[in-house]
Image (cartoon, rainbow, N blue to C red; front, side, top):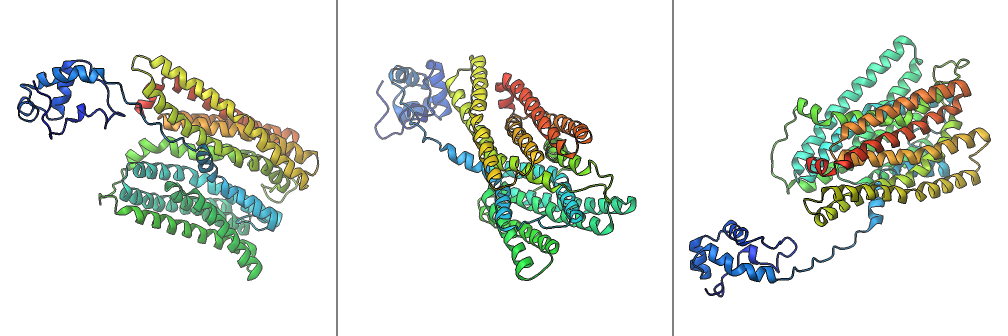
Length: 508
């Protein structure tokens, strides 16, 4: 029979050159005939448009030609800039870095600073409580927001975000009020300090929720500018207008939160025209079922992060008028490790992004019957990435310790001991965060939650014993041991998931 008639477009399954990236050679005549029929080439179309008696005849005529064709080499993808992944990852910690730098240079902070010991204790306690009360809500809100944004449901993303903001803000306010009433009734703190702690819990909690809406848009850099703007506002209100420090900070925190919400609303508005007006419907039971691991993890992570501080602040307070005593020296030494952590945490996003690019590459490289080889290659990649991380904490730790030493922040053996334990613990925390990111991506969020829970228990138990026997500085031992437990437990769960990577990746 004749070849396809001139002027008639070929079916897609025969257009090898234009679809080379997605085209696979047919297995046999039956396979090619099926593809032709899928493209709408019936017997009548094969006869009228292409000059063949039947679709089968057309498949028989074209099969030898297609099998003789050399596959067109896929165009190499543009090399991905790894530094962009690192920059995206570090953007989450940049507000912390900016706060440390600005306070070191100008002695102005969004919270804390030049306060009496009692005020510092109230503000410190309020800060910790703000993270504990909002960590779960931020995880749940951003998880839902990322899902809707990733599926191009921008209107639903907006409606979901504001739904979670209203719900979480209401729960935050009620929780802070209840804690204040309990403190007043049982005399945990004097009323004045209780009000201070409650005010900072509510204000900072509102700020964490508000900046979470910016992370839904992956605008971590905007959080940096909001933080710097808030710090500048504190300086203006306190130093230029003479407003007391605590009211200045509270006002600046609230304004920063409102600014974050306004910026997030602007980004949503830009996307709304791209999304149909489908109403958002929230099901409490469905949300609980889907989001409870993330919500719980958001709380447990901050328990792991702040337990050592609570152990240090409550150790050896027998001569104090309060049950809690803010330890400024402990915080300063701990911040040396925190500074190094800022430069290490960017590796998490870099490693996770590389992991999923490697999965995509491996999926195209291995056949369906090479599942074991696919799993082994990704486990090797896991260990290679982990090995690449090793120099980062060494360099970041040395830089942070050197800066602190030259600036005179390491005053005495106690401060040096706390700083070294802190520098030793944060790299394990980063490894744990990497494992948790992998577990989240592979639909193993409950395992990430279990790792954070067990590590938090280790932190509390170790820190309590060490601080009561050796004194409050040794609470840092609890943090480091807890971080090691976090890295090991989450690593075990991650490796178990990698042993069944094909299943978990498909399931996710």
